[in-house]
Length: 253
Image (cartoon, rainbow, N blue to C red; front, top):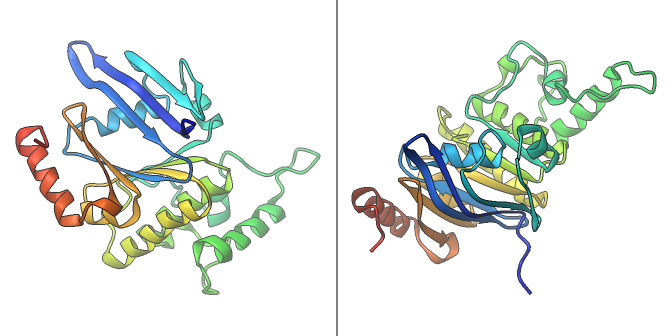
């Protein structure tokens, strides 16, 4: 029996005028799987993610979510299907508190339609202890986000996505600008996505980070899929060697 993927793209291409950004891309993301998407600048990673999140429509090809074909995907429709993106900019309101950032745009309300601030702070406190690893009394639901480290901010964004039942979390260069300590914490948050039974696409220029947390790596080069490897079957050094070969020749042969 064929596996039903959480997400599948079949022969997807995208052109902007005479520029072919993606050519005949076939890509899939399994249930409870983390896939690394790697490649040099201009490989097509950003365009592919914008198609998955509904910002762009493919020029050709088909998309399936849980085996169901989806046409004319939009950003709101992608969110309804469980797609959330954590960008490198983190997209958090620096001057707002932790609880406001968690529930921004998706506030809990009372049966009278008023904001249920008490409930949102209670849920934020629970998430702090169960998911974010914030055990210090110096951090509370009322703590401003600007006081958090880069890794903690990324963690907040990931936990927020998981809280709102995202099934596919896209991580766009999440380790950029982070210290070694923050990066280690961020990678543990990535592992928590899989433990929660969700799926993720992890985009990062640092192959070491990718190899350490993903189940499979997909290499893009000049708008095409140049290779695909299970991390259990390939060492970090072997993967880096293949990446160098793709960058130099455009092929793994």
